[in-house]
Image (cartoon, rainbow, N blue to C red; front, top):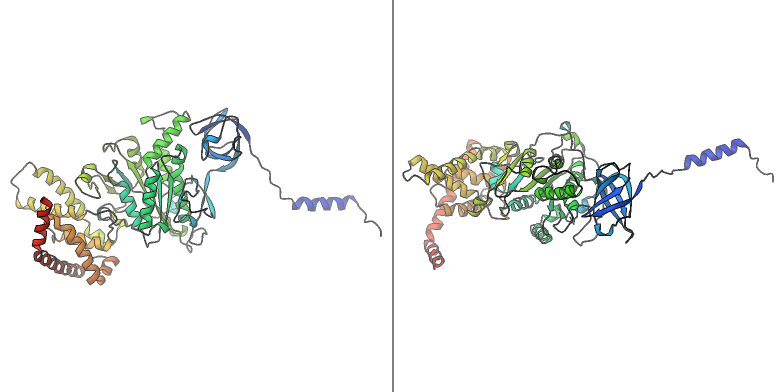
Length: 539
């Protein structure tokens, strides 16, 4: 058999075919060494190609494991990076290399019901989480053209908020107040009230005790909301860099649900995006962590020793909350950032920054809290810049005068302390204001359906409460809610659907008057029991 002739053209063709099938990629990683490390900060020589916010990979010479860091300072001769994970295993002389990508975390629907750290790793002991996507922790907020106005309510179940300081899907509503005034309680109640809705809830715990996070998780489990909630926890024991990225990690997870449909594919007109409620508890601690990080990186301090870009940090984070238009799937990310004030000082640096970024604030006052007004909302300084757009039509009708009534009551109350003789009109305003203030009180985990809130405020506006003792207002309200649920479900449906017509208002007055007669009759039938109880309390 004759050997096949080999010529130049056949060799060239064979080489061309082989080269076309090669799929080799060039890996351009720059490698350097750690010059100095301490307080969770590493200084690396060289790395000329490193980008700001790029993920850096450190290899420990002690354990051989990889530790990741975030490039922050890009100086002439060195790069300053913050470290995540096993910080103590990195020593001087260890290898560091660029990765060519900005920092991202794994995200997926499997995260629902889990507690994760800011790196997206599970920390609840329930096994690994199967991730389907990755999202950058820093992401450019959608522009004006991609958005639409806030037009759907987020019901918190708290009458004082839903009536006077309404929150809408896509809004950023600040919860601000001193320590121990019920800020977290409002956020937790708002999350619990989303049970049974299409809202995914994300609770970001920054700098809190691990035991507090465990308690909040158990609260969500007890109320059956945990299966549609994700907790992102950077506890007080975690490093400052982890506390710094925690809110951004929470926003990244939220954006996964907002920008994608239930099938995991990008949202559009035919594949609606999800709705997310994200609580950042609290951004004061994130600011402190960022200050600590920045000072360790030798960045210049500014007002109150915070770095000058602390405003930009919070604005980048909160601007990611939005309501997308229908072409982009109509999804939304609603942000409830929490800020802790010192002695009610809202004029401090961080509070004024975040107030100017958000679309309104719920201001909680210590003295109202200690007087037993729960939630301790100060109606005068609290505001929602979305307003009636985030309310149902019926709620908008009944709550119109509520803020004015309470504000005039607060003014008259302080005035009446110095005067003994009050005219009938003033006395009537004081009586009405006291009952309306009492009507807004709610215990923890006792959310009211928006229909029941409307009925209760309607009863107060129509002066059904004015001739009752103040201590009877809450029992009457709770009884009225149960009565309407049991006896008049059709009226509740009408209130949920649209405005209160004259005919519906007349029916409501009749039902409330009917229940009031029953309530007063039952109270009159058992005066002895009340007297005995009062006597035993005095003893």
